[in-house]
Image: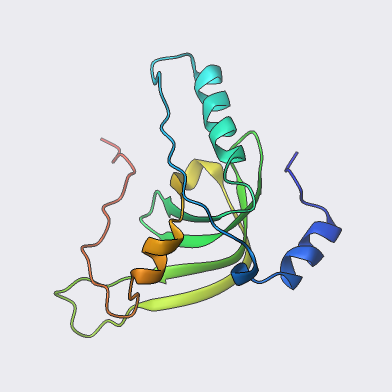
Amino acid sequence: MINKCGRERFEEIEKVSPKQKKIKTKTHSIKNYHQPLNTHISVIMSELSSFLEKKVHVITSDARFFEGILEGYDKSTNIILSNCIERIIYSKDDEEGENQEIPLGVYIMRGNEIVCVGEIDDELYKSINWETLKGHALKSTKNPLK
């Protein structure tokens, strides 16, 4: 069952802009990677709960980069983002490409496609010029079949 995902909650999400929410900086690390799978999943779930209703960045296994407000998640680590945007950042070598920001609104992401979820540091976020930012493409995190 997904946390906080009723019709009333989605109506409330659409009324609140991300500027009206205060963002705090918090860092987390997951310890004891060698624990049984069920224990490892419970650690991940408890970490996600601290990000609820906060602005986060998400990187997916196909190297896509999203940001939005984490509104809910379930035991399969599927997540719901509100005010979600996808950022497409081109490399220094790609002179034709201009960085893009694609608004997606409320967006549901499958847990098995998520590589990383991190809370946004508001001061650092405001200091980044997303239009001129260039970088190398993220490599895929999927293991090739042999």
